[in-house]
Length: 245
Ligand code: IPE
Ligand code: IPE
Ligand code: MG
Image 1 (spheres, rainbow, N blue to C red):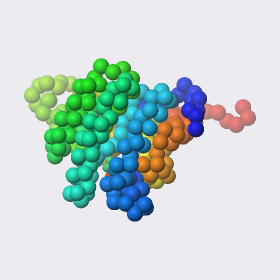
Image 2 (image 1 turned 180 degrees about the horizontal axis):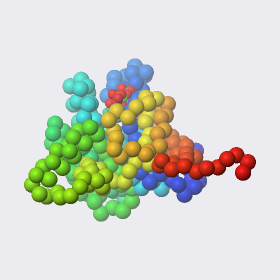
Image 3 (image 1 turned 180 degrees about the vertical axis):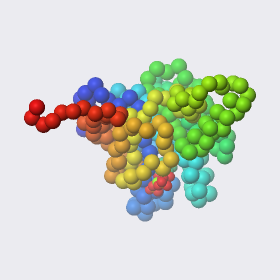
Image 4 (image 1 turned 90 degrees about the horizontal axis):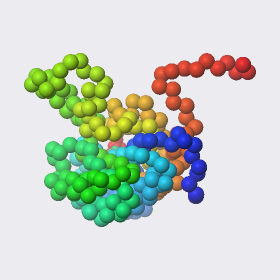
């Protein structure tokens, strides 16, 4: 499929819950981790597709704060895997002028993964193309709890003065450098947010796709963008247009 010609309202910020790796693998008689392995090519294709479509920010859910509840073997695989994907792919992403960012919490996350996330950020920090944010050990509720605690601490110490506004909250979020999500995509057919970017997606358009993540590709992304371009975002406003008048 050739890249469709989108009108000018291509979403600036696309967020994706990359879901369905385990099911993809199990359907083929493989173990869950083989599904994660197969997801890497899908991600690279989607990044290229995002660049081609003119998306400015792509944010993906790679490991949630709840994913620690999986089997120790799967967690261990995912930690090693995230680190290896970064090492394997960072030069390619750097060549594509992609700026890699990490969003997530430090507690529990393997130091070797944090090291590679930071190394990738450093390597690509001067790039001016797509901002690609990997959410690793991320959960929106803990993020908001951390914001609340930080606000209280900063008010007590006098670092923060005056009324708390939406802008104040925005400045304290882990995603403080990112704009609101325009298009929120989830693969695998599940129709839930699973604690991803709750505040940031308050006015996002949601597209749930019946494709398991390893089968997802740039065409799937473009299909979601195409649906997005047909949506009417109202942000609470209304237009009075009686039919026939
Ligand atoms: C998404 O695929 C990847 C991660 C959560 C790390 P899953 O592993 O959730 O696959 P399913 O949803 O069980 O098929
Ligand atoms: C969300 O998927 C987390 C990631 C894709 C990293 P899950 O597969 O963990 O979500 P649930 O458990 O189905 O809600
Ligand atoms: Mg899942």
